[in-house]
Length: 165
Image (cartoon, rainbow, N blue to C red; front, side, top):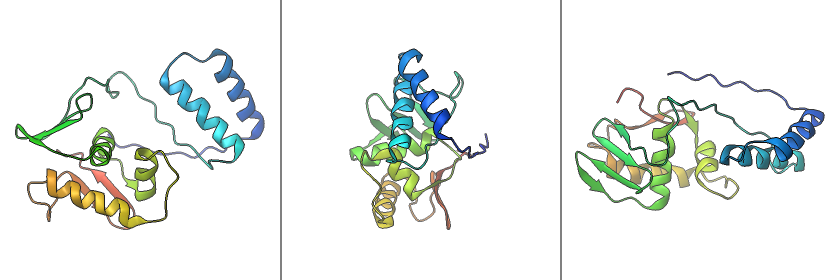
């Protein structure tokens, strides 16, 4: 499924209104709390933008769901990855990057977007950090790391998890 990304500018009046609505009458969900924090960060100037994704019952994964991509299986609850039934040992960050990309199959992410999605801290202007993690991941999960099937490089942009597997 191809995804389009739109940019909508949020003026301060709407941000204040949205913040108040979320604070007083939002459902008690992790997404509502994350959105409230994101709006607060926008209002305080800590963030310049936030990216939203609408998940429905068909596309959202609950923590117990195993994500299967060809011969690769990713179990987020057990934080376990297998290929053809053989467990692949990953570091916590390698797992987080793999799970993030696989959960968003076919979507292209810049190195900065991957970093922001996986790390809790601000983005460090060091592209080699993400590149090193991707290289290590490929060595572990790809049948042939020199001709990757799972994590693909989109030259000049970033990376995506193959949507054909």
